[in-house]
Image (cartoon, rainbow, N blue to C red; front, side, top):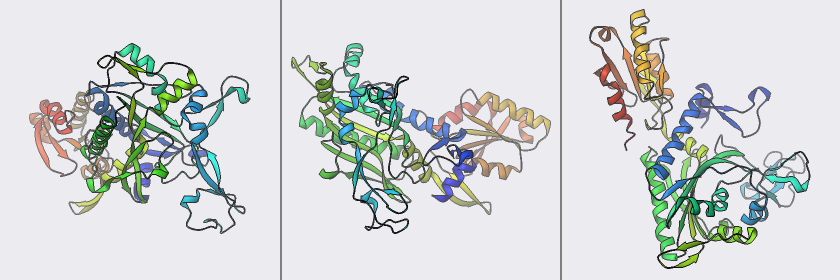
Length: 432
């Protein structure tokens, strides 16, 4: 993990937030390469979950919601963690993460456990009092449930159907850490899949989504041996869940959750119907009955998923007798798809290389590098996961061909410049 964290800082993937002021605990900024990687992960999820399906639509709900939302959803009452305080050094801990009954920092005496609500409070409007208190959302799901009637009225949806959303959530975690694994500000990719209230359909769709989501990680390059499914025990289920299975990744610090697939039943629609007085039911034209659908929810954390892809892609090997660090990211996720490198800094090669870069930029995120030896430039691109390098050399000036180098195999092939866009499109594999 330490090597990856250093790489992320050095190469502009992830920076500590507010670093010039000493940072702010467990908050992170995504640099130029991190922004591209994060965007590619979200777009890969969106293509899979929305754009390639006819039974799921998208939504982008506001972060700030009416405070009654969180009373109805049960988060005000149930979204809590136990914590203990050290009476000496004042550090706080979750009791379930302590090995003993003394403070792990100083050995001091700990207080009795008390409940701590994880929701961030703020105020809406100019007056800061209890009547103007609102919350930063702890999950994106509630924006979908409160829009249920709007979606039915405008989209003519028929069960089963899903509603997907990507957005920021906020949780006042007691013990954030492990780089970007557990943070107080994070992004979620969630989908609520609405089905008839039938146990057999619930079981079928739950199994379907567990399998579908597990295979998505494998499809984009995570090794199967680093993934596992962990069903939740009854005592650890969230207040809304009828059953949950986590997809976990083998992080350096142990197995950790990437995504949870939960059976939410009709809990959320029931509660919002009760608290709002609005009819949040669905009229089934086939059975001529009205009911509140049940829900199966796959919910993933973008930052955790990004960390897992980086860890699984990180590799060290030896090429031409020299050690190298390489991120073997799936080309569809890689921040930069292709780098254009003139072999020599001669004006005619540089001019041709810049022309090739300009030709590729409308199709791919493209880098250009002319500093240092060609081997050193290859290593720089390997380290940030660029899957392909195009080298402009003396032969290019004679016949308009270039060398295309593959990051993982380091194999090189000669291609006409005119064939580059087609060849790179096929190799990146957006059609898969």
